[in-house]
Amino acid sequence: MAAMVVRRTDSRLEHALVLRSTTPLPESLAKRLLEMGTSGVWQVGPREWRAYFPEPDPTHARSLSITHPEVIAAWESSERTDWAARYHASLKPLPVGRRFTILPSPRIANPWPERIPLRLVPGTAFGTGEHYTTASCLRVIDEMSLVPGSVCDVGCGSGILAVAACKLGAPTVVACDTDPEACRVARRTRAVNRVSYAVVNGSAADVKGRFALVVANILAETLVEILPDLKSRTLPGGMLVGSGIAARKAEVVSGAAKKTGFEMQAVRSDGAWVTYVWKALKR
Ligand SMILES: C[S@@+](CC[C@H](N)C(=O)[O-])C[C@H]1O[C@@H](n2cnc3c(N)ncnc32)[C@H](O)[C@@H]1O
Image 1: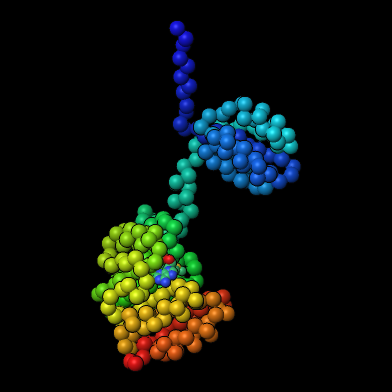
Image 2: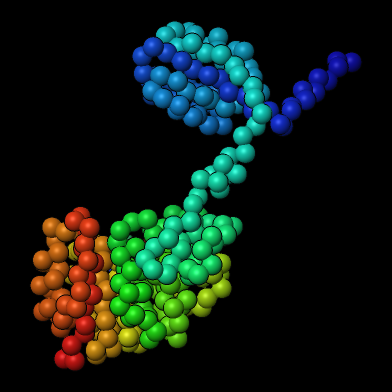
């Protein structure tokens, strides 16, 4: 009877086929490595890649010497990297404005207890606070004391602005986004922050009611398109914060807002992006 060979794998080790060349490594090599069953390729630089495999296999290096003779391939085994821990360690709390700290993962502690923590969950939705448009919305909301009062966050993305509104004491907050994935992330953000807001998969026209503050961090074209809906959602005398406006389009947006019945109260810019605060006139 043939003996069955059981190959023991040491789960503490990771095995990388290290590939080096004097010229930049070609894209065709990545395809070849995928065919060989690599679990991932780390492009250390244009001339050095590390392709990870569950076990070292000498036939891989031999086969590459035929298809890619310019590449020198050698196996290296080392202690397994805890990629999750490394990623986690790279996430840093971000202070924004006078009062907020953005915590890019639910597991990160707030290093500034006097600041209000806005906890994010990993996801594909926009709204990590690192972008000027998000940070400027947070700043104007805080500095102009636009909350408390009811708030509608149009184009909520991660839900970061809705969370901020809740934590500043808004009695009612509604968040909406046309992207179902953003809505899913906004619901998870709501849970990790232990706040309460409604999430509507749609735009301003799909939300019911009128709000003391409407925040819309969306692109200039979209903002102009939905300005009449934003006006319908804003209480007379209430405020609209419009962000996500590329500086070169600011004048067009500002003109459209005026025509729709908004009066400009404040404007912020970093040179590339503009954030407006408008008051809804009573007409
Ligand atoms: C720039 S992100 C803003 C995210 C977050 N509010 C922030 O300030 O970081 C814009 C979001 O608006 C959403 N969006 C785009 N067009 C929209 C529309 N017409 N109505 C509602 N949401 C829209 C996008 O799916 C995206 O999640």
